[in-house]
Length: 322
Image (tube, rainbow, N blue to C red):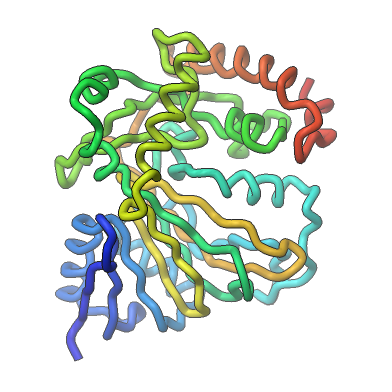
């Protein structure tokens, strides 16, 4: 049977793809799939049987990878590919996982942000642990004209150190080789998609510190824009995982978040992330513009250390990073 793509009912975005085996998809069917990806923003492909290598190979058809076939899990992956102990909730890996339960876009905290993210379900939890997506294209298009005029040309800094501190009270020490690298990258709040030309909002939990606004003004504006995007159920999709599901979405147009679950029970997904190209470049750490980002981040973190005492994860990393 031929590839079948059906839009998600009652949503502004998304489609379900059936009658395809992604391990052997033809070039013609992949071209149809890629067109649907750009049009709908995300695709769900149920009933797959993908190894890590299969995930990598499929991701590479979209472009170079940031990483591929990597565990997005609350369990430790063994050398033989099986999964062992469940991580304690008060560990850095789980603090990072819990932080990802807030709305975000992948890799905006890097010099070049991501093009596409893919998740494949290996062991979904019995309840909870869903992945939600939000349509920033429809979110932008339904703003009133005065707001569109106001935010045109605005930008915000993006940093995982900010988002972890702000959302989870977690202050990991700076490590240039990790996602907690001490940089903050400035990105436009209104993004024009490099392939479709369609405008969208571009924000999420990593965004802070709009230059030209006070801290309170910046926080209020970013919060109000996010709340607008998710205020209409047609702009939010909840994926309830079944083993063998592949979900992939356009990081240049959508927000996503994980949902809570019983953290003592396994939740194992395989993650592959497609790197952006030059259209997603903010600047590199050696660019003179990076100094302003580092200064804005340092100032923000100093305030958050005073404000976030005693919330869910007040852990020892804060003291080590002081």
